[in-house]
Image 1: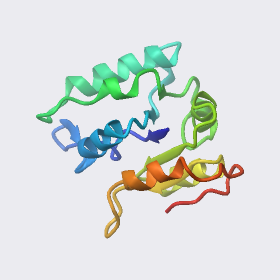
Image 2: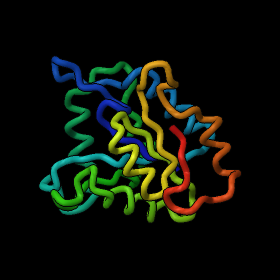
Image 3: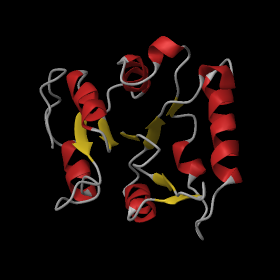
Image 4: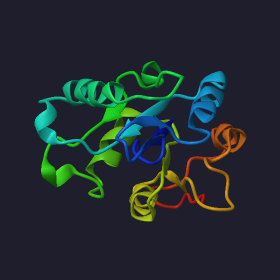
Length: 165
């Protein structure tokens, strides 16, 4: 299971407030889909956007779609009900609550987290994710899909011991 941050990891908001995919994001999602690797989002939105993750996700989709300027539609259907958002201000990232809820929902799957900020990558790592800082100069924009697929064949580590960076 691969979880992503949304803003500046999968999508970029331009100065004109338009929203589009980050370079390579649509292709990365397509490659994960081709390998049947499920994806989800762990993203901050205002808790006031709804009483449930589903309600907050619906509002998030509305906000993103309103300003979407990419020629390809955003791959909302890839994420299904795997969009985790804060229920309260105390759950906002970088608090570990969203990662913990997402990991629990993933069951016995190994979990990967990709984001552009070092602090979020570290929190994910601290609760047992294989974490990768996306969009760094001189590194692949995203953790290579073949590596993600290979992780499924490794013994499951103790929480906090997996590290890919």
